Image (spheres, rainbow, N blue to C red):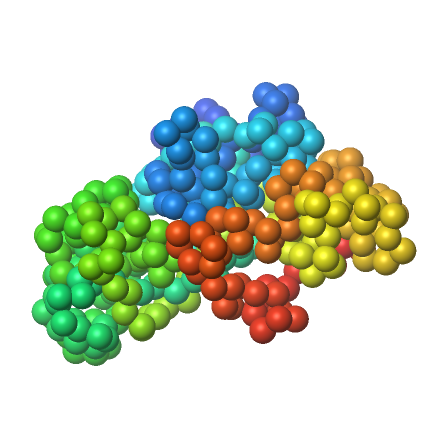
Length: 338
């Protein structure tokens, strides 16, 4: 644990638990029998509970994959719903083991909060949603608009940059909880709702009349979203990072939840290393050598997770776009297991 990180976490709300970052987080997780995962307070497609409290989503699958890798049990994970404002404190304090909550990787967050981003599981960008009867077709027509968004996010900063750069006055209407933002926009308390474009498609499903609203074409920022851990435990950092890499590599190699057992007999050296039939790569992150096979069997590869949670055949209907593999026109590219 760095000297810079120590006073920050000890000053957090749950400072006693915060010292766990300097210990072996994996050992703590194994001892309690589950991964404590910080998620959103309800974002369809990414992290959202049903009426029975069962969580699903692209971000949820990262944590379920970790549970599969560690315990061979996709259900060995508990979820803590967090607002944007409280998410980093919960991680710093040790209340959660990993944050997997549509969180943008920025330099400030990566260098000043005592945290490490373990990768990107969704490449996004900030957009704007308006009522169709407002009569605008471009964000450049929003001069003088009132804009609803979340506090404690990069979204507020991006809005300020965009409107200032385009010499447009605006009024910000900010709330801590995402559902408060949605409710305010739905009630007409603001003209515009802004967040990551994926979030706009997700939150539109919660509006009284979703069809009355449209997402404008402009994307005004880069929002690489991914899981986050505390600094000070490289083994845990590597475990989270390679959980995500395994899902991406599996898609590229054609290994799916349906064929993973058969693929263990593959002669492809890359497949053999990924599935643990050759080498001892799991040992380097404190796991058994079939760690990636467990992930794929229980959760699937990245493409399976994307299609099940946010893809074209889901209510969100999001195309792969930049989140396609690098070999298929996107930017997803994972280092190899070797």
